[in-house]
Every structure is written in C-alpha cells, then in structure tokens.
Amino acid sequence: MNRKQLIALWIGVAAVLGTGLVPPWIHTYRDKFTHSERAAGYGLIFQPPDPSKTPAYSDGSYPKRFGVKLDAPRLLLGWAAMAVVTSALVFSLRK
Image (tube, rainbow, N blue to C red; front, top):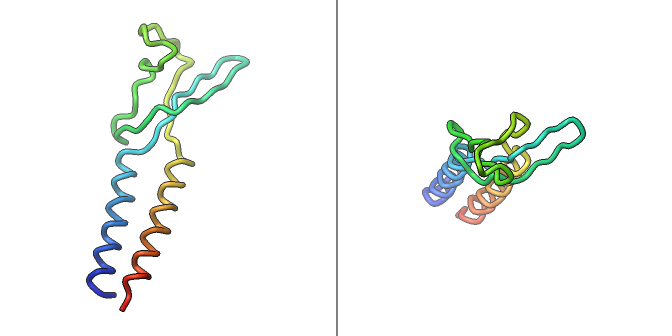
C-alpha cells in the first residue's frame, strides 16, 4: 500500500468515526393507538437531542410519550457509502 492509499484510507476511517460521534437521530411518539417517527437531525452520541424540543410540543409541555432514538439505518447507509468511496479511492490510487 503506497502513501496516497494510506492517506485515503485514514480519511475514510476519520469520516466513519466522525459520523459515529455525530449520528442521525429520530424523534419518536408512542401512544396507545399511534406510533410515529420523524428525523431529529444530527447530535453528539453523548448528548442526544432533547425530546422536549420536539416541534409538536415546543411550548415545553411534552408528555412522556415523546422520545429520541438513534437512526441506525441512516447511519449504516452513510457508513456503507463511505466504505464504497474509500475502497474505490484506495483501489484507484494503486501504482
């Protein structure tokens, strides 16, 4: 593996780690008869978005039915795309 390939590989690793530190989140709502989910944007893995900031209850009177969870499918899709791009770069930079 030459120097350019190593640089491309480390950039790919850094991108995966970066998106792992700031992953996508989902606002959730669960009621007796209703369940819905809506994108909540990106936030630090150690500090997920606050459920009380859910747009439907922006007045601060949100019930316990609201929550936040990690958007794993979107995170994994991003990681897969980064793996494909990084692999293509490493392959194309070979001597």
